[in-house]
Amino acid sequence: MKKARTLLLSGEYSKVQVADELDVSRHTLWRTLSQKRTK
Image (cartoon, rainbow, N blue to C red; front, side, top):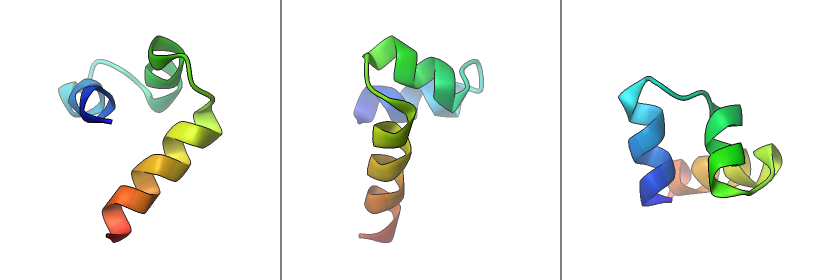
């Protein structure tokens, strides 16, 4: 998740691109990011 946040905060990658880069589904990435925000 640290890498995902770094890539997203750089502004150079979309959520779709980050999911592809990390080899996870978009749904998994979005779900995990939203869970981290609420905790």
